[in-house]
Length: 465
Length: 86
Ligand code: SF4
Ligand code: SF4
Image (cartoon, rainbow over the protein chains, first blue to last red):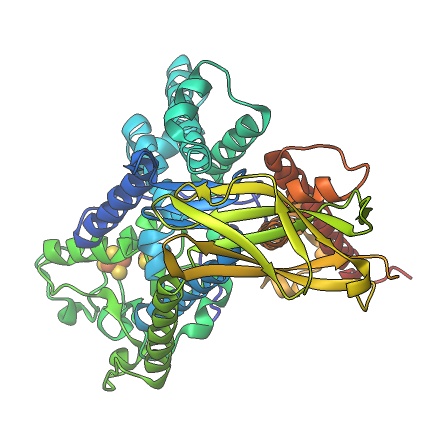
């Protein structure tokens, strides 16, 4: 993207102090409806999802203290980390794919920054009125009316942010318990901390920083232009049609006055949440929200000109060249995505539901028994990633002559998505060791399912004779 | 644009955010990576003298320590990015 000097030069400098506040004007139109749909759906998912249950537990629950992630029927463990990594790569690549196709769709419709800002703007507009009133109110003296309006706005903002913070923490701590605990002041220190942290971030980002997050803080906004080409769908003003701009009365033929279709009403600037003028060309501050498209179409309708002076288009289309949807870049991203999706599906499909972890007891390196044998102590963690309870049996191999002693009756029942820790001891006659340390393999098998099992190596420390 | 701006001419808030924000992102990723491989509950079992902390405490404290390290690196970058005053 070319780096035009933004027209709103004041927006270009400094955080907070020097910048002029952007008062985006409310818009109506097809893209505003789409954006609203995005807000409702995404926030609906965000605020609703933690309340769903699945098989007696929260359906989406990132149980950090328990070190497992529950997503619907699945339970993921740290051992499944590569699946998470794969998922993140897929997410990033999808972003590339959609950016190459249609520009900053993400920014305009789905980014949490945009979505929450929309909500905060909506609240602001309900209380303070439209753009002109907001500006007047902000310029005016601190009357009791202004105080009341601002006070109400901030109270609602803060409550909403707080609710957002609780919901966020509700993904990590079961929300049905968290909510009542929070309101009766029984939440723990870290829970409170993260609720306030996330709430504060929501309040600050959506209430105050707004477009500055996109312009200064968002990494995606900085590199998205690398995914653009001349066939990427972007929002742009059609200068060939619009220029020379100028005001005129309705019904006057612009050609007679030597004018283009742009009536220079500056509405497109007024609606822009980042405070830029789309007529200056594509700018990196443009988040592709299409507010200017909606408002300009409205103006065009009023003037009885054809719509689309500001529209979704591609650089090639603007120059009258043929458009290509399927370009090497898009095909490459698409293919890569398919491969990764397949890998993810396979990864989830072949995931071993049996897990075993071996932890050596570090307090004692080894112990000598009265019968002359040496003993090592371990904690075995048996994981059951399946969704039903299973009986596990543990054996060792790889260390001939060694004996496994477990003070529990075998098999051990491991609950669905659960973990059972059992202390285990391995004993061997040191004469059988030819090295001070040896390797022993612990093997967990599921009763009645001969094909299901998993194994893990452990270290055996002995004293050589 | 901002690339051409002398680091020192930028207001303090902007510099503070330029240090804190990227390090926050990096610390977040690093925390996930670290605690996927290391279980703090096991760590406190294995290491002598490690205070018994809950996993949540360990995760949170770990995050802030990583943030501190990353922020230090960012701050040093900012510091050395200034033209030397001779
Ligand atoms: S809204 Fe349309 S007509 Fe009005 S100034 Fe913008 S481009 Fe011109
Ligand atoms: S220029 Fe138009 S599409 Fe871009 S951010 Fe402003 S209003 Fe949205």
